[in-house]
Figure (cartoon, helix red, strand yellow):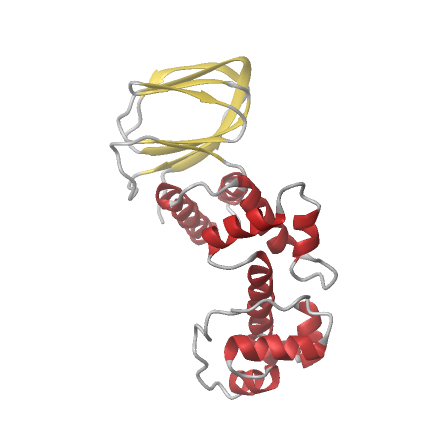
Amino acid sequence: MYFATIGKSTLLYRSRAHVHGEWEIVLNLEGDGTARIGEQTLAITAGSVICIPPKTVHAKEAKQGFRDIYIHYPVLSLPTDGLLCFPDEDHRVEQLMTMIHGIYHKQEYHYKEITGQLAYALVQILIGKLHAHSPDPRVSRIADLAIENFTDPDFSIMASIQTSGYCEDHLRRLFRREFGKSPLEYLTALRVNHAKRLMHENHHLHYTIALIGSMAGFSDISYFSRVFKKSTGLSPREYLRHVEASSPVPEDDRDPITEETPL
């Protein structure tokens, strides 16, 4: 994806009202203040992301100063009738923009292709924000814990819930409403899907079934085999044979885990 430029500001206290002919995506890196975008005035803090449509007058100020990073796109598939502003809570926008900035200005090998792909990923995050709702933060925290720890065989999602200070049954109901799975089903699906990815890499790395199960977060090979077959319809060894023979394996493999089994 083509973008016009990307840059970082020095410490500023005020930017005068101005316009650009392109879309501008601004991430506030530092400082609390206000941003005036067209007729709207927004409170900004570190991590605030603002998408400014072309030819929209905007300005920004902060008493203690601010720094930001910005990228200009000539064309974006975002609505111009509504300002998109959200907090970069997981730092994904910051990571992508920092990578684009560093690679682009260093002009590393194939930098145009690399930054173009990263800029496309950034736009997909913005589009996702337009269509996504904000889940209950308690539910998000449980999902984040599962994603961060699913390769650890000693990690227990239920233990995390029990020590969270919230009602376990209520949190389980909220989680299922959000993700269509219980927390344990969600964790197990992460592990099964990771095991499948490892099997597709196996022609390079030659993992054993036991090692694949362990790397995917299963402490017991028998339990791994039972859960994997329940999810895919194939045992781990049968699935691996299909992969090695380049035989087609159903992509959905049935949505994993319909019943809970304690880990």
